Length: 203
Image (cartoon, rainbow, N blue to C red; front, side, top):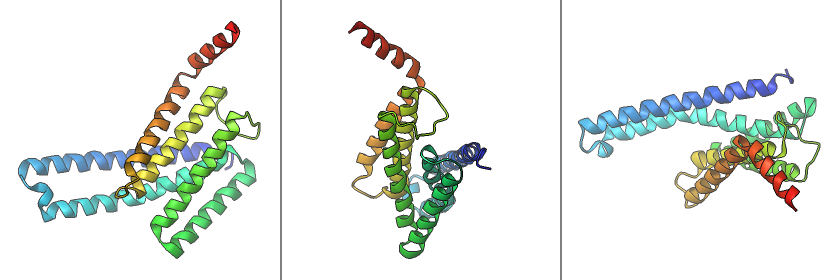
């Protein structure tokens, strides 16, 4: 079970992202068709019902995605039984926060914890810690993966919790920059590594 945990988490994440994508495509297509038929589509009661139905459809998937993101982060630091224990503890505390304060604070706690852990992972990666567990080798590939995950967690945090907040655009652009940098470091790690080695050899 522990051996296949990473594979299971990846499959579940892909499934949820595909499901969210299908709902968005359907919702966008439906709204577009309705806007062609009704000039004041956004001012109708039907539109308000459509928005409510879309929120109801996406909310469980968003919560599941948040849980998966929160549970994926500790696997960089913990292994074996310690990984399962840390994931269980994080999930239990998040559920307790939901029961006491509500769904949004519980989701916020899980995501903020994931952000803090991922920031620690990035710091440990930068100093070359041997404690970390990566499925890939190479400094730039590892740091790219860590930055990409942090950006994605922040993006979900913004998407789920900050839609009406004044911090929405700030967090959105920070997550966008992190995702972009992470993708560049991940996809071009070989080229970046060669350039770094050439620069050092010229000194």
